[in-house]
Image 1: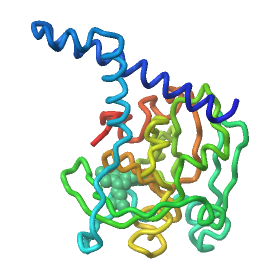
Image 2: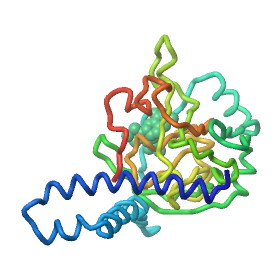
Image 3: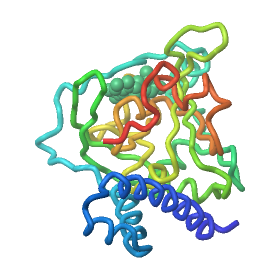
Image 4: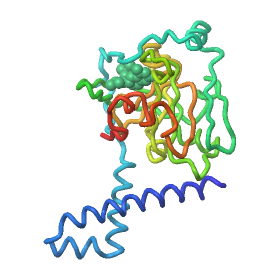
Length: 258
Ligand SMILES: Nc1nc2c(c(=O)[nH]1)N[C@H]1C(S)=C(S)[C@@H](COP(=O)(O)O)O[C@H]1N2
Ligand SMILES: [Mo]
């Protein structure tokens, strides 16, 4: 399966989903003959569907260096005590490998040097936590899209899951390990990066060293820190408690788009 065929596949799936949404919107505006005329036509539906997909692809606002917060607070896990993580950290992450596997043709195991050599992006963006605070920082990292292409994501994959190195809640069944998931539209968004630097310095442990996600059209809890493994999946129901992320398993929305 080549990437371009695959890409068409998920775009078509996204368009079909958006088309269904457009029908819902069409129902709601009955009484507006002009609206019905526009939306009921196949061409109108396609146009509206395309607009919804285009919205998901829009860039998050990028700020000026003078906007960078001097006091970006770390949140959630800030110093993981998990044995495997501590062992990596104590060696300055020299033995770190990012695993990319699951529904891929070519599983990857990447060192930090590999990640730093991969296609990258730098962006100054605002992080919005559901707790009601925001901070602005400059992030540099490897773009997720090209890495997924390198691995060859299979057509059956619909999400990518980020398995993290920290346990945020002690539970008997291990479901307290942090994880997150995003769909392929967010995964291939140009501002979606695996950040290894923050404000031009190596990413600090408190903010997710050695690698954390920046998925700029989503809220704070989607920004997985301490990423150890990225798994392409068809469904996230089998993971954790089945809701697609640590906080989703505890009641937060899976789709945290902003
Ligand atoms: N692995 C992991 N990722 C995580 C968290 C966490 O506890 N563990 N907390 C999330 C939440 S709620 C927020 S707001 C951000 C905080 O990122 P920061 O520490 O850089 O501020 O990380 C998110 N990603
Ligand atoms: Mo958050």
